[in-house]
Length: 446
Image (cartoon, rainbow, N blue to C red; front, side, top):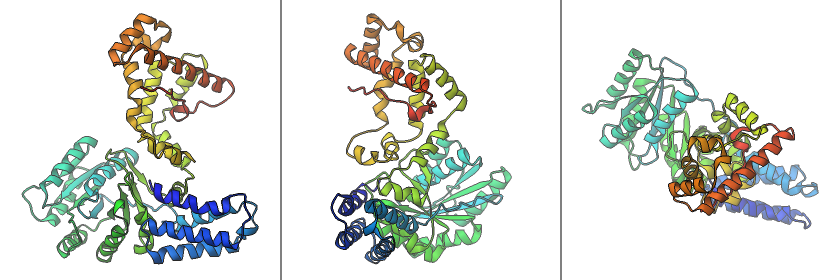
């Protein structure tokens, strides 16, 4: 996420992070490099200049040159300004009403329909709501099909009228259906176009006037940069939407849309999405995003993701087993499944301060765990529970079952035992068992 921008900002800060003397020229060069990095990230020149002028004024007021840690102070100033540029603080999401009506708008290809499914999943699993999805795109049968599939995946109801060509009546009928079935949130997926046109604008405006939505969310493909910002302005001028959703943040995005859309339309970014899985939807926190952009990580989000999968009873049971040196392969397999539920492994590692830069060029994904899982699943339940049973003949059978050779199986078992010892030593020294997020991982290779 924003790797290119992060690298260029880090390079800019090198002017004042080194051992050399800090002076006005160093600071001026840093400001110039920050502006160049923002422009390269597809930030409008006027916005980039205003941003760096504010950084320059604050740097002078904070006496960066006379500071003991000028580099750290400059990074903090930039982080604070980035936070303000992206909205300052978390925006509230209004789901009051019976039912609350949420209208989703955006261009075709922006990830609008996928987001609609993700939002329903979020409201169902994290807010305890009973959502109804509404397929109001009357032009593309594939959009109705896609939303139907997503609804089935997440276990929510969908309302559609394939023969009806009037999206306003579909939306109104869906709200009546929601009331009859005690659904407390209605999420309307509207039609998109490849570009802004008057027909689309009129249609969405008419739906808005008829259903009086609690929230109107504009979905933006963050990979389109400044074009996305311009499109958002056109939609906002007509719809006066309540918030923005950034999608495709897992792609090669330069960051211009995330950085400047709040400034341009004066509407907050409420959600961000990265990936196809229904779980990959997060509330947008400007300060956390600023930290990620500056390579400072995002420990708060990492902890929150871990807590969503955290089972206190199970964690206490595992801690007891670790203290007694009884942690087994089945426990390890269970923990792998919990880690995978948290999201993409590489993205998770990027939330750890300093790790994003280290892993950006390394191919890390959830398939990394497949070797571990395949070896363990080739064991019998008795072998998983009691590693001491693994004699040479059993290892040979396991190797054959998972398609590995005995040397690889032996390497995995050895590293698993080392991990057990490490965790046991940690708990005996008084450390708290951290759950899945703090467990070491064997360095198994094919």
